[in-house]
Length: 163
Image (cartoon, rainbow, N blue to C red; front, side, top):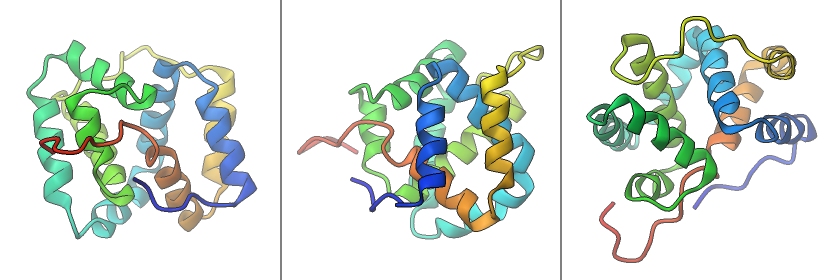
């Protein structure tokens, strides 16, 4: 399903730290990291996914058509690796396309086509520490971190699944 994950202990520790957070805090942290670093991630995510941006856009458009509550549940399902049609479709994408999909979700949150972050939401101190560690990574390592974080999300596609 995914390419080999990094052996970089810094990245592994960061990902482990994030995965220890509850699902909604993981979603919030991931969004805030994108907001903080969006200018540098913007060219990397779409540019790196020249093979299948239409795939990421296709899933994004399906998510966009859901109610805000369903959109939030789908994001939770991705992190929790629930077995649904959408999470299997996500699971069939390349790691870089998955990164692009999450980038599209963050853009959609800003445009309010995807359930937006509550305006008064504040990250926990633990999440702020993790975000600071991500910000200290070199750009290339940040992209590797993002890919390694999103790669195992979703569910394995099933034989004959319509994805």
